[in-house]
Image: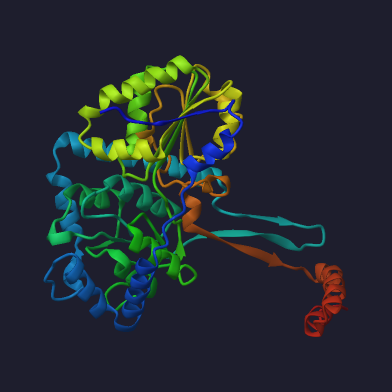
Length: 437
């Protein structure tokens, strides 16, 4: 069965309107989901452990007698790691090492120790950078298990210096994923609770007798988790509200079309709302990629999901040249951007908006998902126009340093007093003037 992927041509007058229709996606704000999440959060806030236990037993079909019994000890995490086949354990360890090395470099390059400077009159100004005390990471469970999400969320927190990382992961029917637990051991997660959904978000945000309150919650989840994260923001920090996965491939026609087809599949297989777009100036090459898509699809275990995703939200876009392809990339601001071209850097220099850029035909997006090193938690739904990948900086906060000398107070005091009188705030003015000679 042939996939009917939308084909767009930038030379058509209504091209931008057609492209906008492909990109159109608004995060679902189902009122029933939002109400349910709000009720669960209110219950967890009021009843603490009892509410968390009730919802966990109900939704995950468990019969636990206490929240304490839902905690997984470090011995069990270590045992999960040791139970892995050598090849898989080595792969997990290597991925973790690469993620850690990247984020340690990121910490060093972002001036993690802050700065100070001294003015001529002895006044010292600067900034102090400190890590958060405690962070909660949400890891999906159930249908999908993502050990890579454990690494990508926990490791930068630990590199930043977070004292305690608490992981929550649902285990429907009591089934634990050994690879997820092993990843927690490698990443240095401090405590793990087998809870999920809005109740897990509430427990982390408000704290219970068993689960301590955190400063920030990171990690992906379902619609209930997203709704709960929106509602607790302000009580705790959150990373982002993630939308469906996206890939945009800019190709000059020099890459094996089978490779590009599989790259498009790599995001389409996530779910039916995922988006995969190819932009290319070569009509004949686009036809080859389309042929590859239809030839390779039947060999994919998740072919039905891929077909729906590509049919509803995929596109093959013909452009004048690679310069125009870069203009479109900036308009789309994709989560994952592959520049599959002979000289990818020259085109990357023209791109301002992308969550992560994969340069050259050998840089498949899947490498970034697992083991390249940079974080795979990325802005979606065009939010790469104003936000960044998860990083060490998300687990740090900054405090301004103001140490005014006696001489500095004479100059700054007069300026502040004048402005304070202008705003009608006499106490502000007086506070500054009391220091004047």
